[in-house]
Amino acid sequence: MKSCVMSLCCGLLLLSFGVAKAAAPMSATGYWQTVDDKTGKVLSVVKIYKAEDGTLAGNVNKILPVFGQSPKDVCKECDGPLQNKPILGMRIIWNMQADDATTWVGGRVLDPKSGKVYRGRMTITDNGCKLNLRGYIGLPIIGRTETWLRTETKACK
Image (tube, rainbow, N blue to C red; front, side):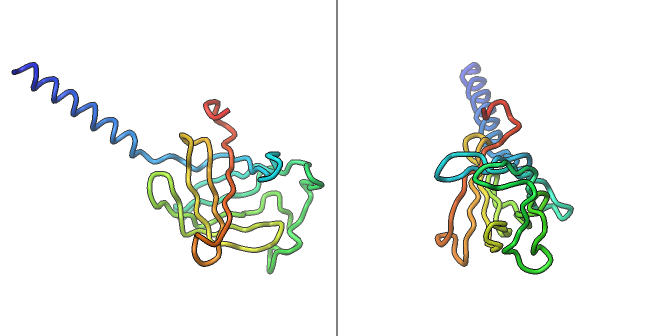
């Protein structure tokens, strides 16, 4: 009887550790490759970081010379202070707030090619190796999702 109770206690302890471990938040911070939906080619690298207000933001860290794009490209279609500013270094994600352990919502996403700003939602998948970034207007059902790939983790390659 005593060994049965001991086994049960150990089992519950291991189970609770597993649940706690599964609930631990995954980080979206780091470097992410943006990928062309049609060709699978890497277009750029975006650095996602924790902003001073605790939300997540992202800047274009690198632009690869594919499809005629260049690190010297500017945001021709952007409005206001971003118009004709370099895309390299530009903040394209801001104000993403944690919703749960793998999802951030409430932020904005700038498409530097069109100059349009969308509402945003980010979700980490595949053990932190992929980030699904959804830009939408109004409801999330009316939008588009891009899948980005984490760059700096060996487990993701």
